[in-house]
Amino acid sequence: MRAVNIESLGFIGLGVMGEAMCRNLTTRGSWPVTAFDVKPEPLARAVEAGASKASSAGEIMDTTDMVITCLPGGDEVRKLVLGGDGLINRVRAGQFLVDMSTSQPSLMEEIAEVARDRDAHFADAPIARTRQAAADGTLAIMVGADQAVFDAIYPVLFTMGTDVVHCGGPGAGQVVKTMNNMVLFQTVAALAEALCIAERSGVDGNTLLNAMSKGSGDSFALRNHGIKSLLPEIYPGQAFSVKYAAKDLSYALDAARQHGVRTPGAQSVAKLFEQAIAAGDGDRYFPVIRRLLA
Image (cartoon, rainbow, N blue to C red):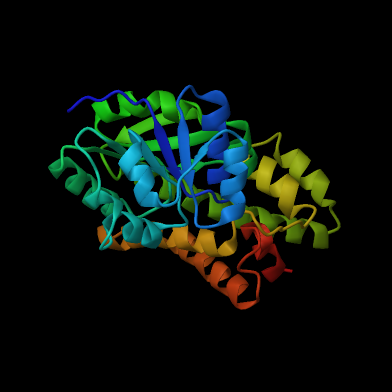
């Protein structure tokens, strides 16, 4: 590994999660941070929080030691990194490129190979938990990278999350993240079904979830998605939408098909996501699938 001191950070993608993550880097970290987003409003807020403003993603790549991308999905990552004028064409020997989006594992392996050929370092580090966790700096971060790369970037990642786990080589972080989300989506769907059945049986929904939280049905999904969204039936925009959830689940289903694994549960939830999008709820918080069950 060609060593380099990480003395400056670049952050590309100030969406629902990325803006809060970038803010934590500027307020909790010891590195100067340069930020970029195609939307001026979150970029202005990032500058107000202490980041420097870049005029383009390329400028960040040219001027910082470690570049973090946090984009909607694999299509956007491929275009930004591997496109005709992609970031990979600007990468310097010893530079770190870290993708914190949720993307296809195969794409991560492809980027890592190109970076390695240029004597640079790549890691995939997708995130889990809620947007409140992004704001609080308590994300779970699942990292796919060589051990030496993981050790080098760990202090930066720990500024944004409390649980930073090395999952294996490049692409492994994305495998773990997509499996995590696949389980989460199925759990939320099961909770939605349980609430609908209980309430129609005359049992108060709050009573149901409170009792389940003390038994074997307890889960992170119950205490967060169930109590805070499914129970009061609050499904805001500017959250983890049905469209994003469907995208993440498609990565898991692609992996299942690639390895010959049957996924009846995940496929059932994928159909619910399709129906929610068709019903006009694609931009709402994904527990909105409860509406389809009533």
